[in-house]
Figure 1: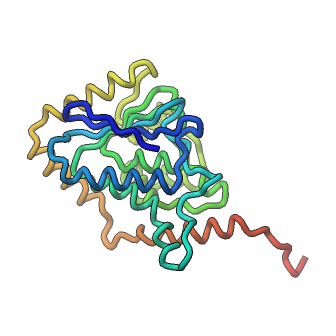
Figure 2 (figure 1 turned 45 degrees about the vertical axis):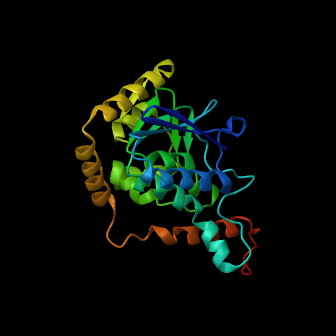
Figure 3 (figure 1 turned 90 degrees about the horizontal axis):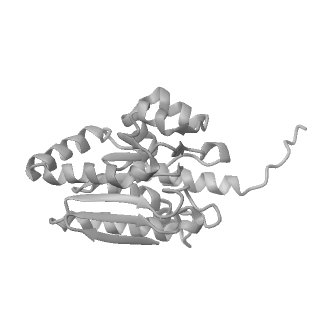
Length: 247
């Protein structure tokens, strides 16, 4: 699922399931968590670029193989229920500076992964959205607090509760995207940001990133248990609605 390519001090991590628009399942999310956790001791890597092969960055969770709902016993099911949270948290906690390379669809879990990155560079024809609530699933993976931190609560409600889809220009206006570029310039734009990060004094950059991580972390972070909400929401979504006994 993942393709990892080293380019000097820059590590490229590619979602590599283009036929499915890089839809996310348990395996992909587990791989992401493992890669980004392992980077904590890769001291020669200065920047990680997260991108997607094919027509889109990521169209969200694989609805044909929904992540987070497998397992046999209650504890195992709960562990699987946190798989998306673990992937996003591994990206957010990574000591290496992270850059999301965004194009095409940036939806649902894909947008959740992008929000966990430090910087987001997008093509000017990308599309952003969080359709979970509209299809009957709660938005989890720690996405709501990250979104509120990045763009504010009022705009976050519009995207999450109403499922509003936005383009790159709006995402950049909101502060969700740091840079936008024509599609044929995305690699140059990402490289310019990556090279600037590499050229920045490492200790100052690392300690400053730690400050941003601390300020973004809510007191008594409640998001770890949101996997429980996801499991419950997925189960409810699969249950046929029964008519009310009063009808």
